[in-house]
Length: 338
Ligand code: KG4
Ligand code: ZN
Image: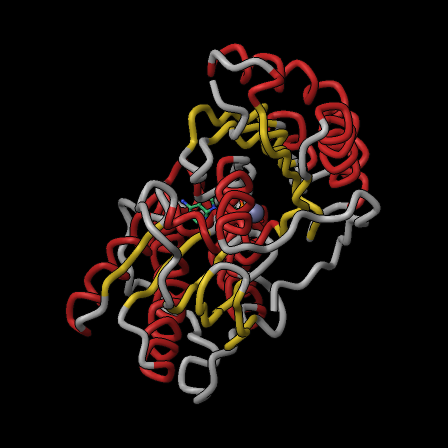
């Protein structure tokens, strides 16, 4: 086998993830050692627990991914790791391991921005170059609208002024006593609720810019929670979740269409953990159809944190002629994409 495969490591937060992809970034094997059950009792990620578990899980995960792909270490032609944004103590584990492997193998190392991984994830398996488009990235820590010219050429159009969309889901999930993380829990309950049962604010929907704000929505959820009392009946809880989710979806869809109109883009992509949300996917598909836009939605397997997207970003950067990263490139918990 030619030594042109990509080995990628993602440890920016609470998931230890390793993937092997071909030279074009098409994933051969992508695996995650999830820490969700470890952090669930705390209702959020505990940084020290996250880094300890990355340390324990990463090496065996690399071995098992290589085995599953039927690949030997010397078949790897490029090593990549997430260098930010994220938790410093978590980022360091993947970054250091990847650099050590790159040195040991004598292969180039690419340090990858986690948000670039998300941004490019809808293009995994699509073939060809990353086309110019508008990207909406909705994750636990970020809500970004980006004008994309091609791999590595990004311009920020808008972002959240306060909470990220995923953060709003998670905080309100916690408020409702739902299992962590809140996003999937709220989405599940919302399936049987009415989207117009409660009136939640759509902050900044008519602000005329491409920024977001979700903290008012969170406060409004807190007030409604208090009004419903300690034990809302199941139907009330479902209505709460459906109406709350709809408020977030309304804003995301409106701003994405606004960004496409402003830039003249015909292609729009959606990525990040919140892009798993089925209601969001359905509403984006419908809105794109009415507006004559083409939607590229990240496959759900590549929406939440994973290493296939890091491998794909590294392969795309190499194909675009972007040079590898120096081995003294530091991690950056606040790394910006644009
Ligand atoms: O991209 P991601 O895995 O991690 C970050 O980079 O932050 O995103 C995690 C976020 C969490 O806030 C989680 O609640 C949210 O994605 N999420 C969802 C759904 N699945 C995951 N939010 C709404 N609906 C979902 N089905
Ligand atoms: Zn992420």
